[in-house]
Length: 418
Ligand SMILES: *Cc1c(COP(=O)(O)O)cnc(C)c1O
Image (cartoon, rainbow, N blue to C red; front, side):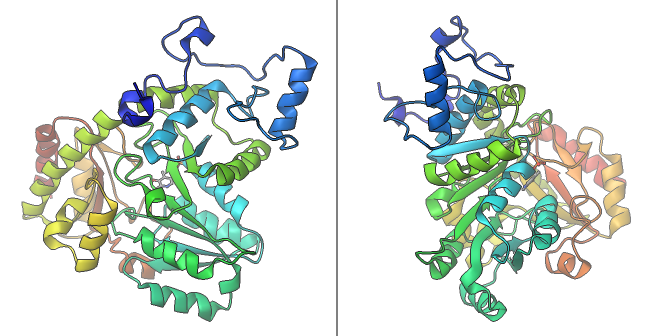
């Protein structure tokens, strides 16, 4: 039997773990240990030589366990399992999505460099780019969904910093309105500015869709980033992150992770392995529910507009349809919608929800609702909020695994209160 031909969901319970190394335990134990005992001094010497790149790893040789800031079985097995979904060579897990994103940016950007990024990006990412990276002298240019390759290239050239473009970071579908960014278009921009001396790295924050419904590496991305707090963790009980890509690029990221010390702990690694076993069933059920909820909202007289990928085939633009067909395997389970009115009406709806919880975050088993304009996206400048449709009447919904009829009943009674 060829395990390599099996689908990820078949391997999430076993891949990378040998029960015989752990007293036969069927589940990987939590290796709650800071350090590992070497059999001989020579072995310790060899492990360190490999860890610090002084000696090449031999074919098939695994890096020996040294110290939990460098490696730990719960992290390594988790990383191996995450690789299967995105068909990536390697993975690095972090204590949060933000630490995965910030570590990748710090590794591939230097003072004076230019970062191109799609707008909107996650609030924390936006803040890191426009405050912290700026303080380091790293320039940035933002672009919106729908801008053409030529427009973006013209803006980069006008900045005079095209020769310093080092990284392109995008988020698609964009939180909170599900706006689509074309990964292949970004890969062409990357190619346009890549030289022998200066590679350009393309990273995609795939938190909204991944790792099931969008595979950015297939479309020319170098790095895939996740807040594993969301669908991967999926139970609103853990904060974690991940970055996937080639052996070479993840090698660099793991190098910086070792020195920043922001790897996730063994307990977090164990929780995520447990979550991965049900990832596909959870996400598929959430997506099925989301279709029902979106169809209900679309017809409701108190709802003005629904932002949901599942509606693109009937009402999207030609460009949206093309990107949707090429990039996505499902419409996902994130829905935003405009209620008729403004903040008052949106808050009345949110305050009256009973089953659905009023909270930020997304991708969990329970349905969550929030108000992007005053909560997750409060920091975005007013002129951008208007351009991005982040208005006072917008509500964001993360659809959970409850029975869809009960989710709709809750939405119905809360809309009735407006
Ligand atoms: C939540 C989120 C992040 C940040 O992840 P944390 O785990 O909270 O640090 C980054 N990107 C997106 C799209 C997110 O939704």
